[in-house]
Image (tube, rainbow, N blue to C red; front, side, top):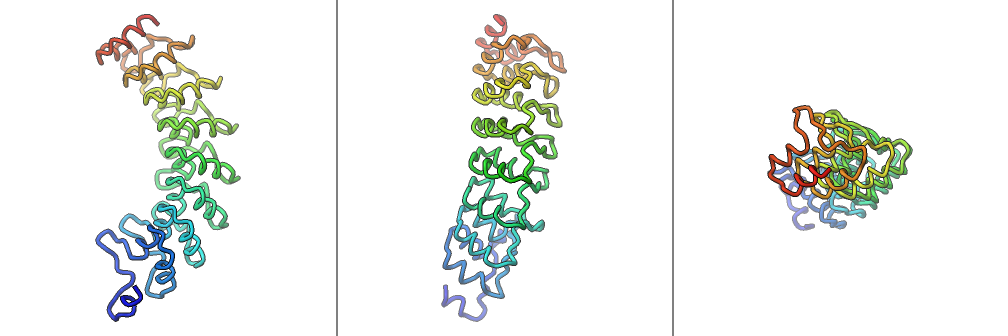
Length: 279
């Protein structure tokens, strides 16, 4: 590397067809020595993004290379909250990738906004919750600036994303915060319970039903109830859980007039048909 960098005509910051520079590759793979060799050169742009907008620091954070993150941060021109980067990719990658160490390093900086939304209105907490990273979720919830119930552009809160993805541990952590509404409806009208029921996440369904604020028969998306969603997607375990609740009306129609039994018949699911007829 030293020999190459000493040759005339060798550009140490030449990108490949994806816009990735040698510094990005070195950062992503945790090669501290190579990063040090390039980062101090005037002909290497520390802020240079690839074709997706990710900077070398983003590659280090995404690759869980904490030592490289520290090296890059030693250069004050590295702005972890730069609006020109890919959705402030440095910290986003740490949160979405579940790297607790990198997240802690980044959040110690005064110039990092831990509650800054991306272009879709999603916060770091939203991404971490969606990916089931309990450690990062806990770290972010320890920041006073973080709103644990902040909805994105579609009206989905971190709890909604965690419920949709079936991350029971994250759901429990978020429900431990008073600010979190366990029965929140997003823009289409879907609640965390509806998402969990529709996707067959039995553990999350049981956890949410443990909260008195949660209506197990509340019409959600397209006036479908959680039971309708569970039947439509043939989640037998969830159907049994919901039918065990007195508040649930087994034959409640949705906006199109279809009842849970109709969905079961349409799908030809004999077990669900029998369960609903018994219910």
